[in-house]
Length: 303
Length: 286
Image 1 (cartoon, rainbow over the protein chains, first blue to last red):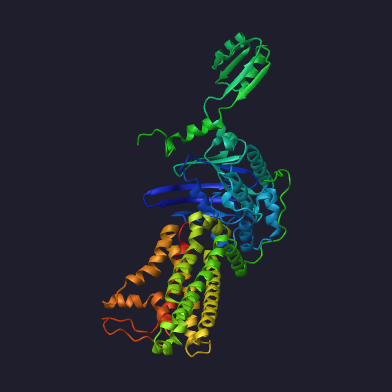
Image 2: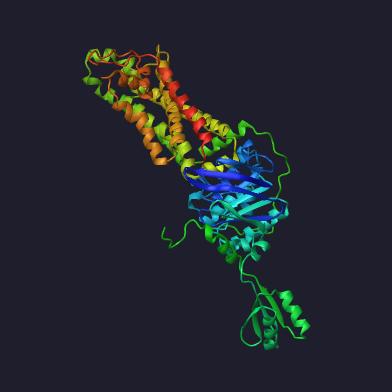
């Protein structure tokens, strides 16, 4: 459990994080979304005490992270896969971390195996691809078997197999009752990963809710209907206040009524339905709409 | 890369959190230093280079022996014998090597971002930096002992061919040897402190070189303040401590730096580096 309370971080005149309050719960994957420069990384750094808040507080499992003498058994964090000295091998890097936290060294080998880096374990990290560094960072985060895990843009640079593996891993970690907090600036990455979302823009909270609730915020969800009685149903639905667009042959695209209402109306009028499918507005659309006012660095912006 | 094992269950750690031990941090920092190839090679080449500089000076004097006046030959030992065992050039090289080593030990963490991984694993920053300081001090003292010992032994062996070698039983010699042994840790801790302040790799190396090497060379003894500063540099302190007979002060210099308090200069720079590292390094955002 991570509790962020009225968190503020200023750098000179610039306010990076402005009064954030939210809670990340155990047992599910929570996505942390926001456009570039929204304050995600700053917030994550404050959670593990790398940056000191200007005001407000953050606790992990009820404690300030910096009050722990050793961190790896409390929080596993992958903030930036490049936050690593390129001159060491993966085995040496994890070995140093394990030693400082009194973690048995055999765990290093187990985790290198787990993330698929056994073959590259003795090579210098400087020669690794971004995807390999992400795997190493994930291994480092898992080293202390912590109840809370933070990942900042963990999917960057991973191949499709890696992305699938990471998503499975996050699900598994959450199912084990851990708190999993994953940041991204791409909604599409979260769509298949997160159960809940914390969305911020310009350092302020925009949304803190389940993924489904967030998706429902998007305008323009539509229902695709296939029926041999297309013209009759179209008239019925229009009469009930929906906007109906014929989509060739037996197909209609309906907005303004949900699938339940359309099914009920068809049943009342004795019309046959062959297909009834809700196309929720994409999360991407919902995200773009919500954060449109808070995008810090807009391409083509004439500021 | 080997294939992934997506369905393999994580092996949970069965134990509860053990007590945080400082020994673990020492072990981690020790391993951290030695796991870098550049550090290992830097230390080895540093010792070899220093020994070469010193032995080379002894060989040069032995070769020039025939041209020395009888008075020069008579006065060679013990003062010049000790001077040959660790030359002024070797001192300059030590300032550079040890200063850079100390700086790199910390600034490489800042410039690569490794420091965030380090502090996330060990939130007790002061304890971690203390471990780093102790490991660095031990390693650079060992470096100094090895370079000084090997240089002394080899150069005296070379000089003994002209019966100009001295032994470690020579009165007052331990002060000179100790000055060379302790110069590396003093410089390394200075570099460490500068790294904690500056945190940018190139700027840190430039600053360390400037402070340890350039400034002592720029300081004249024409003004009182300048002479005082000069006297307070590790460079000058080493020169005085390593001077076995006490070279007379040049009477034409208006404000000559007179011997006295060199060990305090060593202590001051070493301690200064430690304090800056602990105070600045443990507070700032990373």
